Length: 162
Image (cartoon, rainbow, N blue to C red):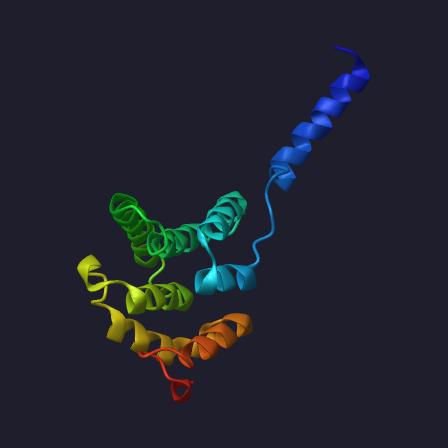
């Protein structure tokens, strides 16, 4: 191996190990919430890839939420249940591992509020509501705005809660 090729190889190795893989993307939280609100299956699939390729610590909670949202859009009953279960496992694990994360509770509240009763995924609505209200100030300002906007159409949260 000649010296120039060796130097290029070392540079590439250094770049990958210190900067992450070239396919990693910045995570756009605003886009994530917009897709949760009104994205289609293709949008959700693209966002799952973006979240997976990001280096954010919250990726499992976001992926879980996206999978559960996708469950409401796919046609097959089997795909609905598979996506919902897989997503619920991811989100619940993220909440278990980071019990103080207010945003995770908000994600769960959004999903619970719209989950069909057959999923039996509605039993923490009031706990999550109270936790979000009590810890609202701990959310980053952009997420606070998202929660306030969501509360305008929610049957669980109200704008007066904040």
